[in-house]
Amino acid sequence: MKKRYIYSALLSSLLFLILYVFLDFNILICLVLTILAYIGGILFFKEKDIRTYDPNLLMHYCYLISKLANYTKLIEDEKINKNIKDITDEAEKIIVMLEQKPNKVTQVYDGFDFYLPLSIKIVDQYVYLKKKDSLTPDENKFIEEINLCLDNIEIEITKLLDNMNYTKMLDINSSIEIFKSGNKVVEDNRLKEEE
Image (cartoon, rainbow, N blue to C red; front, side, top):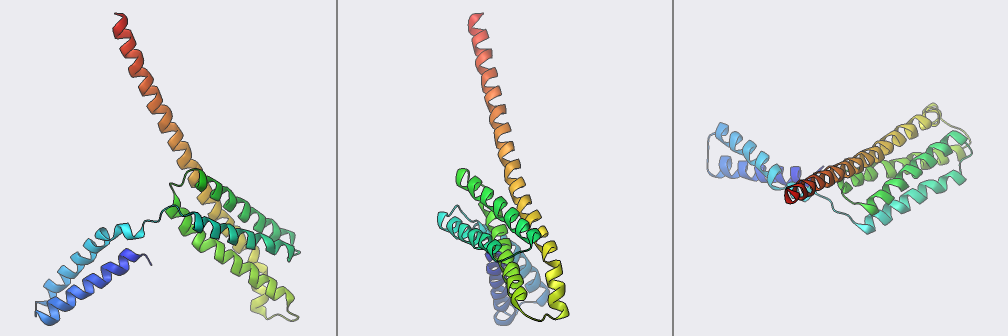
């Protein structure tokens, strides 16, 4: 859960206690003021959720990516290996883009914080189950569904990469428009000077 929501809940709970228990306000007034304090707290503590570019965190993600890639040596299933390779390739592209232009770190960090450890847990469980002699029906079902899970993770990581590419394209387009408008101003000034 995001910090601002926790801080806001604590602040509004404290306000409710003070108003209702200690100052003996009407409960409706207390509830309205508590809700307003919660909303105000969300807005006030918004900066607490902003994440910034962190090379150490990128190193951690690179470690998780390499750990996931190493599982391909333990797995014989080509489809699973392809899924793992696709996930790691897309994640590595995102890391490279972040190093070049770290403007989407919060979205990428949130995605990586969820999907990379999840991928490792899924693949780790798969390797563990493949080493077992006998499997339960649930374990067999998990093995059958692993490709679907990894496909979904790959789709989500690809969405992160596509979003970063789209943002990069918008930045380039806006730079071109600024350049064009700057050239137009220069051209207009040159024409005025010639007259």
